[in-house]
Amino acid sequence: MNENNGVPASGTVTAGPQPAATTLRHDQKNVRRAAWAGLVGTALEQYDFVIYGTASAIIFNTIFFPNVSPAVGIIASFGAYAVGFGARPLGGLFFSRYGDRLGRKWVLVCTLMLMGVATFAIGLLPTYAQAGVWAPILLVACRFLQGFGAGAEQAGGVVLLTELAAKGKRGRFASLVFVGAAAGTAMGAVVWMLVQLMPREALLSYGWRLVFFSSIFVTIAAWLIRRNLKESPVMAELKAEVGMAERQKTPAADVFKNGRRGLFSVFFMNVGANAHSYIFQTFMGSYLITYLAVDSTFIPKVLFIGAMFACVSAWIAGNLSDKFGRRPLYLGITGFLLLFPFPAFMLLNTGNLFWIGVVIVLGFIFAAQGTVGVQAAYFPELFGSRYRYAGVALGREFSSVFGGGIAPLICSALVTWASGSWIPVAIYMMLMMAITFIAALKAPETRDRDLLTEEDAHK
Image 1 (tube, rainbow, N blue to C red):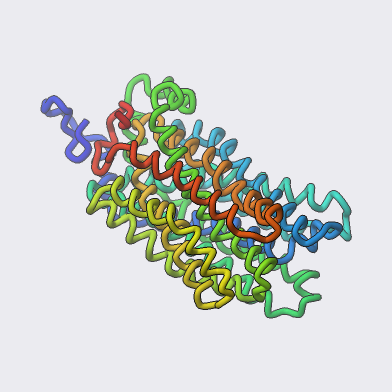
Image 2: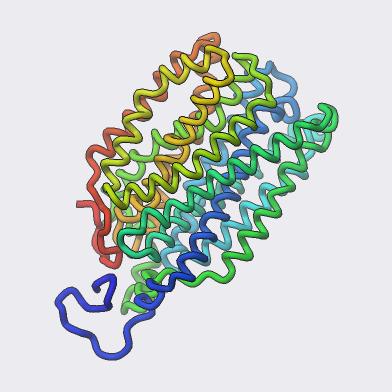
C-alpha cells in the first residue's frame, strides 16, 4: 500500500473509508506527543546509565568494592556496569516479541517502569560495610533489571517516530530520541555536581543515594506523557491485515529468517560507535581521575558541557541525514572517529583542562550523539514492517554488549596492563571503529523508503 494516500501499488482505488494509518500519519499532535515520549523516556534510560557510570568512576569502588586496589576496584565497578549491557539483548529479545505484536506503545510503558524501579532500588542498597558480599550482588541484580528494560527502550522510540513521521522528516523526528539521551546525560551530570558539594562523609553515607532516588521524577514525567500515546499507524495497518497476527507471534524468528542482512548491518554499524560513545561518557572520567590526577569534581562539569553540545548534534545529524542521505553522513562521522583516538589522548595527556574539555565535547558531539542521530531513522528503514521492532532492538542491543557494555572494562584493563599507557586503548578504539566504518561502506541508502512494505529493505 502507498504510504501517503491509501492507494495500492497497482493504482486501483479501494472502496470504503481509508484505514486509520492514513489519518494517524498526518496527526501532528500525535507525532509531537510521540517525540516527547521518546525524548523523555530515553532521557531516563541515559540518566540511569550515566549516574551509574559516574558513580563507578567516582565512588562505587569505595562503597561496594573496598578491599581491593583503586585500579582493581574501578575494573570491578565497570564489570558490574557491563552486566546492564549484557541484559539489554535479553530485554530486546523479550520485549520485541510484544512490540511487533501488541504495539510499540505497550512496550514503551513497560520498559519505562522497569528501568525507573531498578534505578530507584540502587539507592536503597546496603553498602559492602553493611552487608558484605551481598552488596555487590544486589548491585549487579539491579543493573541487570536496568539493562533488561533499556534493551527495548530506544528501539521502541525510534521505530515509533520513524513510522509516524512523514517522508523527508523521519531523521529529524527520530533523532529527538537521542536528544533525550543527551539531556539524560546532562541531568545526571548536574545531579552529581550538586551532591559533590556535600561533605565527603555525607556523600559516602547518603548523598550518592539521593542521585538514584532522583530518577523517580523523570520516571513519572515520562509515564504521564506515554500513557496518552496513540499506536503507530504502521502497527495499526499490520494488525488489520488478514493472517498477520499469526505471523507476528515470533517476530524475532522472522527477523533471523528474513532480515539477517539488515540485522548484521545494524550490529556492525553500531558496535564501534557504541563502544566510542561509552568510552567518552564513562571510561574517560575514571582515566582522568586515576591516571592524570584530575579533580573528580571536574568530571560531571565537563560531562554536562559535552551533553549540551550533544543535544544539538543529535538533532542536526538527524536533519542532515534527511537532506544528504543516511549513508554518506554516517560515513563522515565514523570516519572522523576512526582517526580521532590518538590525537584525543595526546590532548588529554597535556593535563590542560581546556584541551581535556575539547576532547570530551568532540567525543559527545560525534561518538555519543552524532552517530545515533543518524541511526535513529537509518536502522528502522533497514527492515521490513512486520519485524522492524525486533530487528532494531536485537541488532542494537546485541552490539551494545560487545560495544559499550565491555568497552570501559576493556579500556580499564588495557591501561592497567600497560602501566598507565593510553596507546593500547587508542588502538582498541580505532579497531572497533574500523568495523563500523567498513559496515557502513557496505550498507545501502534507505532515506524515504516505503515503511509499509513487508519485504526486507536491505537488498
